[in-house]
Amino acid sequence: MRYLALDLGDRRIGIALSDGILARPLEMFYRSSRAADFAHIEALVHQHQVATLIIGLPLNMDGTEGAQAAWVRNYGAALAQAVELPTIFWDERLTSVEAEEVLRTQGRHPEKHLIDAIAAAVILQSYLDHLGNEGQKP
Image 1 (cartoon, rainbow, N blue to C red):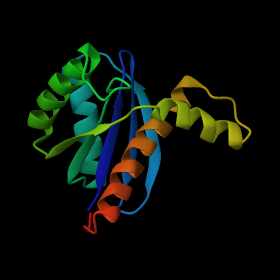
Image 2: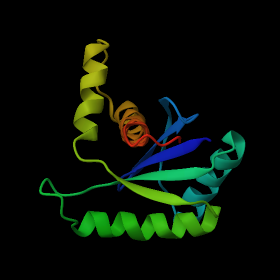
Image 3: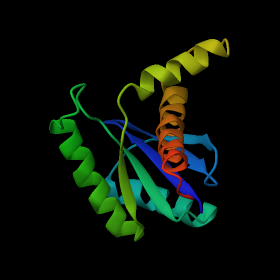
């Protein structure tokens, strides 16, 4: 089963892909309109034969949802309808920080376009690890 993870931002969307075991950064693209964004994501879904979308949910540090989480839920629900796939919202707290750390340990400068895709991979790997810890098969 293949998963596509999204790290939604105001200007960019980081995307990661998984075969159900390991997540890897796929790309980052600049948002334009919902229609254009959804068409791009739908093309990736078909190209990679994705079965489920995982969308990073920006929770507050205390676990509550704020305005940005409400926007992500709204955007994600519309996207799920457009691509006709099951969608799971997954906690994305501190994933950008973790993505920056990954780049630093590789000796690379933490550029925004790299951080977004790596953050999506961190979100997706967290979800996959959760499935593994629950004794479920992705």
